[in-house]
Length: 359
Image (cartoon, rainbow, N blue to C red; front, side, top):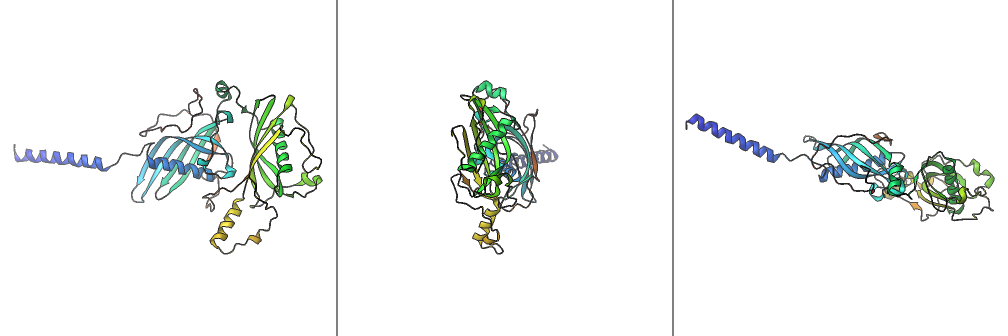
């Protein structure tokens, strides 16, 4: 073999060795089972909850697809994620971490959807933007699997508004809260037949300027407390209407008010401490200057009851206005292509038991 041929063989072997070494040195791009990708998805979803101003907190169902772009100079990686989500029973008002919230099951008018998420990860995960599309599971599919399960109602139906008002009336009459609350928004309604029509209405409430000592004749003039220290709450009201008739009762504040059938109307509420009060309390604990409890001299503070909730949150000092990073809209399910990344999609975390529904 000539010297030139031996050199050619040597160079060929060297190139193959270098290519093999380079291939080993470059790790495979992350897939849907990558711990880092899962962390980005989970923490980005938490930041989506912090950014939103209405609706219900979303829970991660699975990571459907992703793309990954490392930036070695900056020491960060950029992700574009497609994640499948399920709506939980927690309203955004609660500011609860999504992992603490239960997903709506087949009996709770379930909602599912997808989110397109852009985020980066270095020492921390940073949400860049998001666009989510969600929708209710069709009632026909729910009834096919669970004939007795509740189905969604129109929020504008008179019976829905009446259920919310009766439920709030009972809360105001029986609670030990210092001030009355007023209805803010009706957020969800459903019904089923249980010895008669039964209605389930979810709604948010806000504290008013009227104390419990306010005369009944003045209650119609009670305005919501327009201040960052106003308490807010989230309620579930239930009304079982025998013979499809509502119970007529005196207005809130009337001492002669009564419930002939107390089982007809039930209400459960969570009252949330104002975020501003939590920030101020933490400032006092840290010893920050410029904060005094007395500078916010509100009379609506009251003894804590079992329905109160103080949710620790990482968004106590939000630099951007909420709602500035993305949107969550009600849209039909999209037609989407198969995942491009490896090990995608990841397994489902939730299963509604509806065979015909492809989550």
